[in-house]
Length: 259
Image 1 (spheres, rainbow, N blue to C red):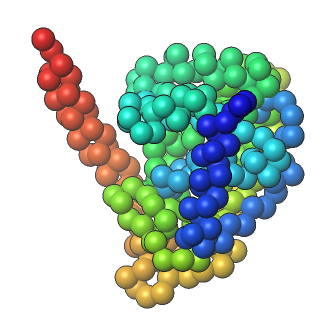
Image 2: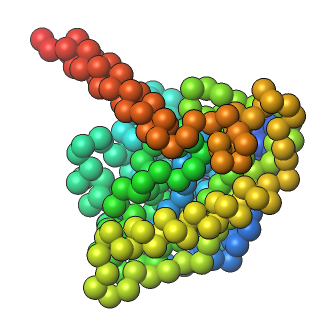
Image 3: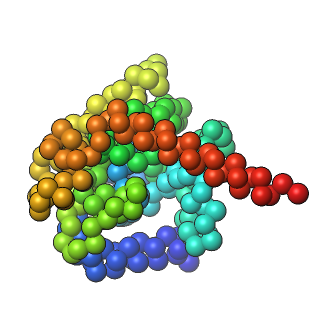
């Protein structure tokens, strides 16, 4: 019965991805440690990133505990499963509890995945990194494993853009683990992590086996590669607007619960 829910979810995902005919290519899986704690740092382009990272880890017979936004745990469908799989809810502006829980899991030899960008990148390029991944690795003295996925955002991503036709390629690149040097600060380690992930993302994009069918299908490419995704500056503004709308909705829900 150990980890039964997690294994059932993995089985369901494999069936769903087989039905969609996803062509998943995992490179560098040997960099995922077969035992012991590590922080996995992954880029964030779509709603299924966690699934692709998790499936890559299963090829090394490892399960990953993901740090995910608290709202996912409030959902009556996903919430019980997320808790059963021992993922970590992160409340916006109140992340200390999630950080402590991640430390406990690392202390127990687990793999903990952090999305350092925080939210999905609308530009499909790496955003500025939050300090959590670097801070966890420094405090526990464990390696960071950089992971990038590319193509998964074509299946399902922000603003509900999706490509449900069969055969979509998904490339996953697992980089070499690195242990933060003694005395290194969070900013230095975050910069190193981001640089490594930028190289891996560039590799994934350059070697991706599929191309847009026509000009209307260029939405999933970044502007620098001829796509119609917003430039990073514009994407940052869209993120701020979405965050403001989310705050308004949260305030409205809070008012409704006032007796």
